[in-house]
Length: 251
Ligand SMILES: NC(=O)c1ccc[n+]([C@@H]2O[C@H](COP(=O)([O-])OP(=O)(O)OC[C@H]3O[C@@H](n4cnc5c(N)ncnc54)[C@H](O)[C@@H]3O)[C@@H](O)[C@H]2O)c1
Image 1 (cartoon, protein in one colour):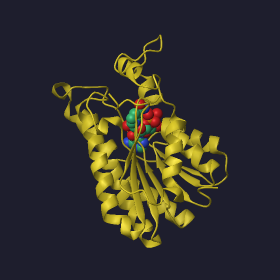
Image 2: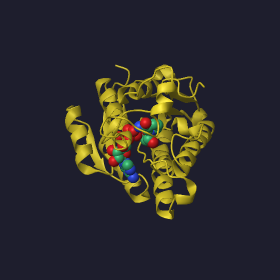
Image 3: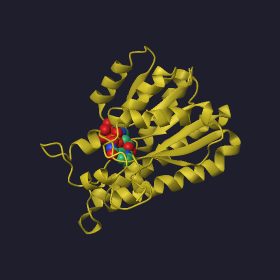
């Protein structure tokens, strides 16, 4: 199996793409430390994994203390950290800058970019000691263009690509590969709450209809890319950003 014996930390694993990544990784031989700020959903993910090894961790990715605790406990328990998926994220509900409060700005930046920085910094210690590791950041089409979020979300996701490139540049020769996945509109908890009763999303429906795929993506379609990037098959891929977006960015 592609990830036999690997230990993977996945953030935002209580829902959507993070849960799908956890399932895909365990199905391919990995053991997962599933991290989420919400306790019950991440416990449910581990129940679904049902592999007898994976564990749930309640932690806020924007808290240095939480992040360092998760990495320390992962190393104590499993002896290593092979894969880190910085996937937790929050949307700003398309709030334009003049309506963005300090609280909203700081929350979105805190989760979406401080989180990946804090987790990468902590996980790099065991990865550099091992001389091998993989970091996968869930960025977005909002890493390239406006309109997929508001000011805070778009800014945070642009920053995720900057972090991805710099980490790849600094650590590739020391065995750590770092890449980003840039999803388009994926049907998850993040987007579900914006749906109207008749299943439409006024913020993105027109853009989705204009894409070649013409539909929402599924969390498992992102998990397939994460599996590839986490595996040794992607050994020559450093600092890249893969759009999995049904063609959203084409026009
Ligand atoms: N859904 C989309 O259309 C879409 C598109 C592009 C990118 N993304 C990105 O994909 C990633 C996954 O999103 P999703 O769509 O699966 O969303 P989701 O809401 O289904 O899952 C995100 C998970 O992150 C958790 N989380 C939120 N804040 C956290 C924190 N501070 N610490 C730990 N966990 C926290 C949530 O509890 C939730 O379980 C995010 O980074 C998001 O920005 C989503």
